[in-house]
Every structure is written in C-alpha cells, then in structure tokens.
Length: 288
Image: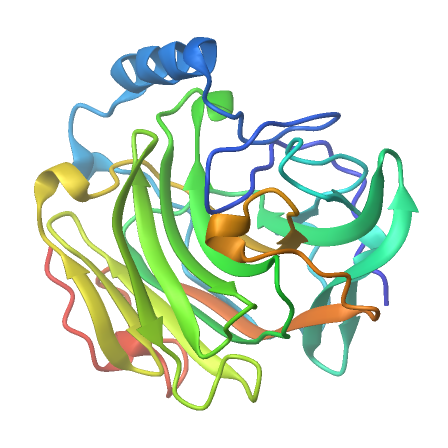
C-alpha cells in the first residue's frame, strides 16, 4: 500500500539545521534565517507554558494509513546537505508495519529518494512513544522526533531520537530550544536498533524532559532554559547525506533499498490514562 497524501502542509526534517528546496521545510539558519528565527521566537513565545494547547491522545498501530493524521513529504528536499528527494512512493504499509525507505533512484536533482511523514496536528506535554526498527548504512539517519519552527510562526523547538545507521548500536537523543541544540547524548540500544523492534519514548513536562529506550531512562533535563515550550508535530524520517560526514559518517551507496519500520506511535497527554499495557504512561509518574 502506498501511503499517499495530496495535502500541502508545512514539513521539516530532524537533526541539524538545513535548507529547503522545492517544498516546506526547516531552513538552514544563515544570518537572515537566524535573525528571522530569533524574531519569531520573541514574537511567538507563549506567555504561559502551562497554557500549552495540544491535540488529543492517540495510538496508531498502522492497521491502516490515517490520511487525516499524517502528511507525506513528496517531491522536495531540505537542501544541499541532503542527497535525496522525499518520495511518497517510499512510504508503505503492510501487515501493520509502516515502512519508510531510502533507495538509489534519480528524482529531480538528487540521485537518491527517501521518505518522511509528519502529523498534521501539534502536540504538547505528554508521553510520546514509538516502536521501530532501523536498517544499517553509513551516511543515513533514521529518526523519530517532534518539531515546530519559524515557518509555523513559532520558535524552533525539537525533541529527537536519531539512529545514525553507521552505528545502529546507539541512538542519539537531543533537543533544540529556539534553534539551539541542547542535551545531546549517544545512548546504547541493547541488541541494536537494526536487530529487532525497540521502544523509544520521551516524557515531556513543563519542568522536565526524559528520554527512555526500552523502558530505561537514558537522559533527563530539568533546566528551564533547556525545555521546549511550544506544541510540536510528530515526525518519522529516513534520509541520507554525503556532506554531514562528521556527524552521519561518510555516505556509501548501500546498493539496495534501506528501510526503517514502525509498528506503533502513541501520544498520551499528561494526566490521561495509559492507552496500552506496555506504555510508559502506565508506569511513569507525570508531574503537573
């Protein structure tokens, strides 16, 4: 099944600042972009973070592709650092598993094609959880993250899980606050992100942010200056770069289709009951 979408919505990518080409996306913050981002941050910063609005709790087990929830990126890229063009054809659903792929296929001005989806709604404080499996390959990034930014008339806030598939034994967790990277950390994925499905989750509260891998706490932030304050969209993406070698490794044509798979994504708003037995929300105390 092809998870196609004909909607035109704002989209973004994860990880590092990047430029956009023929579609919506996060800008590479040069001088003009940085000034715009700062201006947007001051103009749009909420007066009371506790008043943050959020779309309601949900669980998506991908028994079908909900086009009212998801936008599929297609026909554009995030800039010169990205060596692939987003393609809706690489987002597919089969037997309750959503697949996002990367393959060698010339598409527009790129030699490779890649995949990304994002929610159409924005979510605030709560428990975010994804069950996913990645692939391997130097120069590739398989990610589950949340993001909002200046193109949405908001400051750039972001919360990430990024598997740099040059080394799928680890996952990078980090966040961005008004466009500045914070709290970056590489943590182990026992058994490997590519060997089976693993659970990645974060608990976002007004006064702290916690990341979990397979139910184990791997990072925690309580500094108010390093906590996001804006509702964000949820993303999954798989993309490549032959320029960000210091971070993602030297890109090598994998010679095959590379795929990340997602079995479940859930958001549970703070104070709401947990929605499935394995949920972090069943065991983690959420402060208000």
